[in-house]
Length: 178
Image (cartoon, rainbow, N blue to C red):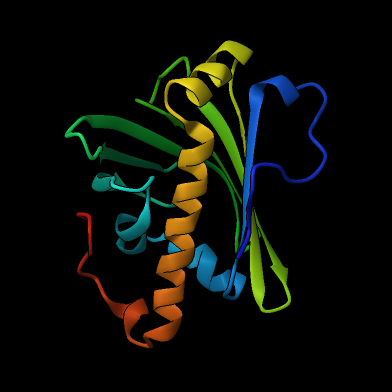
């Protein structure tokens, strides 16, 4: 499994406002997509190392939202809101991510799930409204490292699912709350 901070050629109009993180995950893309789109899975791996997630509401459909709180290892709570803008199972998800439904600083992410032999290459391309917001996310919130850690957590969780035939039917969160 490899992690990189770059993917395909950047869009020249957004290159100074974007972050691209990718990872090869040793599982079929349908399983990786499922782990990314069902709350019983998300609550077990979402976020950088040391973070846990509490979901307030979750509706995975275009126009639906995921309202949640990320709990940092230092005890800080981060209010989060994701609105699903496009869903093409099991290939692509586009979303808007901010602190609330009407956050003017919300950023857009597109996730591409590409089957590559026995692995899935997940490419997460995030575009911020301004270069300054992107730079702040990188410098203050360590967005690149956090994105890499989040995809690493996803890879470890999916690996656990593939080793445990009953894992896809579990509903009790581990390390987080649903």
